[in-house]
Length: 66
Image (tube, rainbow, N blue to C red; front, side, top):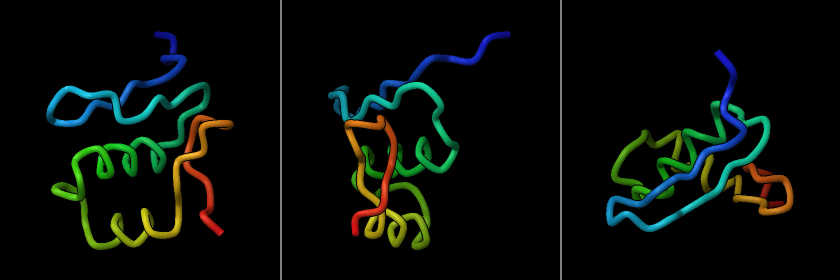
């Protein structure tokens, strides 16, 4: 079965939160879901990672926010 080329992450209201393209790392997908849910899902570690990483529209994934 072929892998998807990307994902569209929606908020609970049905709004598009993120487009994740090409090679999506599991970490990127998880953090995009936590962010879209306004931190109502996920752990404290996920919230810490979201503090350290931000969505990069150029790569379509999460990148260090340094």
